[in-house]
Image (cartoon, rainbow, N blue to C red):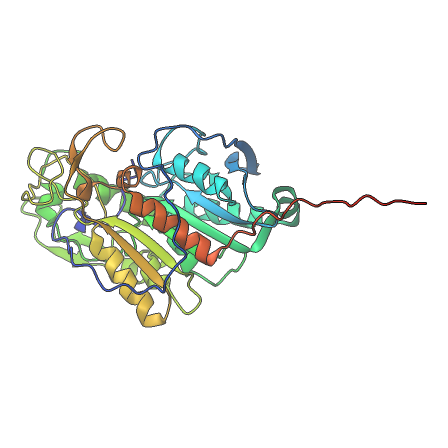
Length: 382
């Protein structure tokens, strides 16, 4: 499951209205048959060191279709900005399934490990992923992997969605800018005012999910966009912190970094992510109970706001809102919960997310079909 990162608004006040589609018609993919991902795929993978100084590696999934030069996709797994190791093939996670499937469609897929957040911005993990793209674009790697330097994409889950959103949004350094982005439950705006009250965050039992989000945000940014009036009960209301809001929080928010050169963006988000019930279980209709230790998620309103921002810039985007209320279990979830409340794990179950992710990349990062076999006509001398 993806990491616990996002705004404190994850818990309450979710907006579930779906805005009008903003994307042109895209090339529709055939069914991936990977939702759920039940059978291993015969796509090999190898790890390579992309930063020897920090002992950072990435897992490379070679393309098994199309012909070189291949478009590349950098797949960034979220873990709440904790340390991430390179993907291990054939684990059966949604991210590993995505890497193997995209490789089978002709993409060279690379899943980098990266360092944990350390209370400074830019976060080491963000810099690491940027460096992995720069490394892949070096002539030696372009040649070795058969890559097209002008056709790089990125897919990110949860916290990884924020990182790839920044790769696509920022155009200041073309060495790590990518040409197409897809996110599954990626936070888009760290300047959002919290919907949960300070009492919700600090008044519950130690370690509740809202406290964890607050602590992760501190580790990521090195500051807090909003602080409580008091750190002791009754805590009061939130007080905006202008320096953090205009500094690290804005710099870390794809919605604030988006501009004229932002890459086309596909987003998937469950409509009721982060709704907490008193039992600690996800439920799209149950009331929020502050001490709950339940699910984590990114409010769909963040993706909707990003979609609207990109529309105002004339940038193409598409949002899939997972709204299926059906109860599902393994391999989609360890317990029976509604698909519409899942964070990232819906991708193991929802065929539309798979198909639209592939379609997005096929549209903006087309794969060159393998040519027909070369037939050498015999020559005769006489």
